[in-house]
Length: 263
Image (cartoon, rainbow, N blue to C red; front, side, top):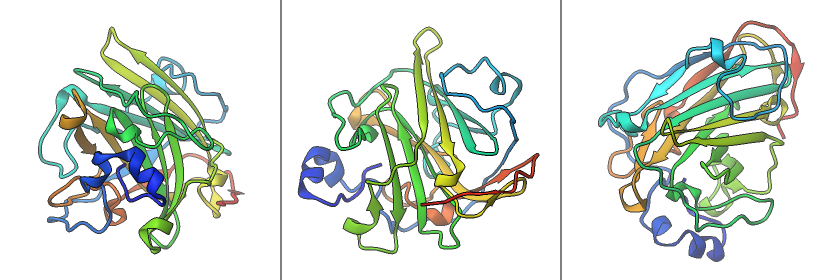
C-alpha cells in the first residue's frame, strides 16, 4: 500500500505514486455497511506452499472470501475477481489467493532491498492481508505479494507518528509460493504464516482475529483498481489502513491450545 515512509530514500523510490496521497491513514469515511466475517477450518497436516489450488485442503473447500468491488463496496470489476481460502493448523495460518485478471500489470521495475522486501509492489497487481488480535485495533500486521513473488511483511502501530508507525525490520517467518496461470487468466498465491508471529494469545478453535483482504489490479499504474473484502469506505482516495473496518476472522474446528510469541 502507498504510505508515508520513514526515510527520504523510501519516498524517492516510491515516486510520484506515494506523493499522490493514496492509502494514507486517517481518511474520512462514508456510511458503514455490515462488517464482514470469515470462518477458517482446521487442517491437521502441515504443508509447504506450492501455489497449487487443486490439492487438499483447497480442492474440497469453497472460498470463504470472494470480492471484486472497489474499496467503497460500490463499483464492481468482475474481470478482476479475487477469491481467498483459509485454513489453520496448530502452528500456521494458510492463505490461498486466486486472482483473476483481464490484463496483468506488475511493478516489475521495483527492486528488493533489506531482507528482500520490495517497496512499491502496490503500483501493480498485488494481493494484501492485514491481520491482528491486539485489543488496540491500531496494532496489526501486513502481508503483501505480487504475481512476481515480490513481497512485504511489516508490523504496524498507527498510534505512532507516520514515520515511526511501521516496523519493516519485523520478520514473520512466512513462506510463499506464486504461480501465473496465463491460460486461465489468473494468478495464484499461497502463504503459510506462523500463528506465533501474529498473536500472543492461546491458539485454538474460536480464536478470533481482526483483518481485511485487498487487491490492486488493472491495465497499468494510472488505471489501477483498488478492491477490498470489507469496504474501508474512505471518501476521496483509496485507503486500506482503516482498522475500524476490519472484519472478523474466526478459527474453527479444533482446540489446539497453543500460545504464540506475537513478537
